[in-house]
Amino acid sequence: MKRIVSMAVALAVMLITPALADQLDDYVKLQMEKQRIPGLSLAIVKNGQIVKLQSYGLANIELNIATTPDTVFKIGSLSKPFIATGIMLLVADGKVAVTDKGVKFLSGVPDAGIVLRCSTCCRTPVGSRVRHRGSIRSRTSPTPT
Image (tube, rainbow, N blue to C red; front, side, top):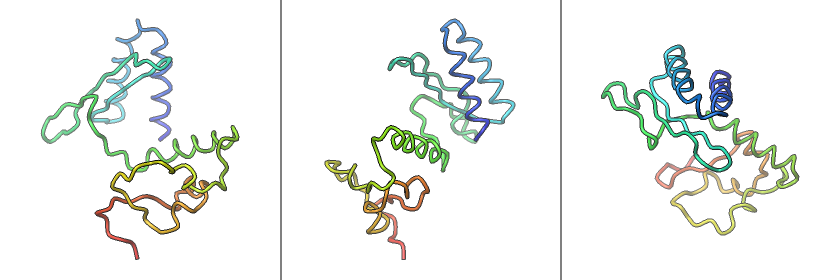
């Protein structure tokens, strides 16, 4: 996790000047080799505009399929710390309270083919999401016992 964050910070710093694009590509390729990363897609946004959109390496090593900006990566639980940090920033700004219920933020959201894992999931405090104590599951998943 620390390697990914440090790589992201280094990439962002390198993109302050567009002339550094070649250095950025070299850096990404070097880090991919050093950290044995088979493929990645990179998007850097500055002032709401995409300033770099690039894919590197392979999405599937076995079939030799290159990554594209549309490649969907299996990230597992990697996003949880980012979501928790975002929630806590909203708490710090007074926009969300850890005691707010999830349903408060879901009004007007259309049914997207998902059901809650447990009947109380949306009625539990936002702070429970930060601690990953509840989740949403697809409609085709078996109901937990």
